[in-house]
Image (cartoon, rainbow, N blue to C red; front, side, top):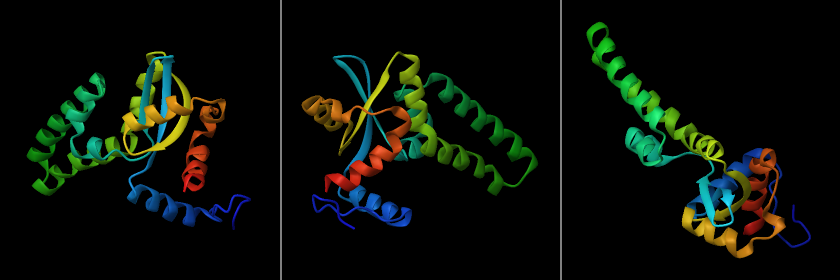
Length: 165
């Protein structure tokens, strides 16, 4: 199915997921742009966070999510001590993995919540390879076409990935 510009649009959700994987292989991912004032922009990647998964506590500290970093550290230590003395070692290794998966999945949402508490507002979504490139691309275009309601950001990022290629 093509639109009037000859751009192929996904017909169903399964194709959309495959198409998103193809776009990510090329190195482009969707970034949500948050703005506090004209010169203060932050880009947050949409979706899974590999650094959040692989380096959980360190990543939380770098992103200035102090409370979550302390909680993850304490829960990991506490769970390791409790399970080590009660259960086998295999269960002991499961707790950090579960925490890493949760931070990998929801870490970028935690960053968005932190930005909202600091007074940032959602300004739009762009496709880019890095957060710096996303901000540069957003400031270059800086048109009302990019500004969309936040509750439509997910649908917009899916559409944008299909439209850009």
